[in-house]
Image 1 (cartoon, rainbow, N blue to C red):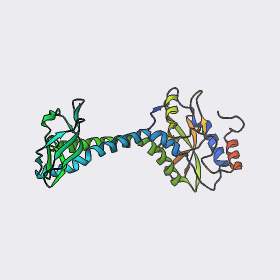
Image 2: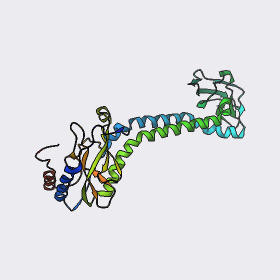
Image 3: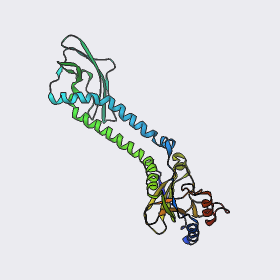
Image 4: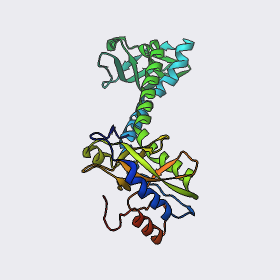
Length: 309
């Protein structure tokens, strides 16, 4: 699920002056060759931690469809044609019953038994649901069928409410599908951002830039639960905002930070003239720098000797 983000509160962020000087040194040390980028992705384990609720929703939708849709498919033409007739010998099985849920939905699970014109007893288990209206007495559930196909058994209340049942099934399947997509949104974004970033930046000459962190993941509890610390980033000279998910939890490369708080100015890269930017991690592992190139950038940023500011 997507992380709740909040504006970084407290005092005004540090001035860009010192960060700009460090950025100039980093640009001078940064290689001017084409670089591949490898922004972090959730991986299969990360997706599994996010999608278990989605799987439950989908299983519930499939289970409901397996129960309600088959009877609806057979009842719809029967209701439109009006050819179903009452079976002369019939009864409901002992486990038949209907329930009234939350004064809104009635669900029925019935065992239908009826003798066909050729003298053979036919049976069919049916389930259906509809909005509003209390279930009728079991004595009113007349079993209907077709003389030519007596195994197509149904009940009169089910045929009378076939339009209601169609809307009920459509509502629940549509609602469950919308919920599933909402729950999957965070994971979809977590995959889409790195993919688009890689397509826009990989294999090109990259330019270091300043990024302001104007939003951050709220609270340690949220970060621990989702394992996807979130950031909102904006280029120092303006431009589009970047929502960044960090599934493996690496620290971003800081250029300035207030005491006891996440960095408010971080190092990023872009392609000259492009609106796509990518923050860099503290270890500079999201770009394929050589060890010598990485060391030069760290020295230029004054991080190698001092550690993280």
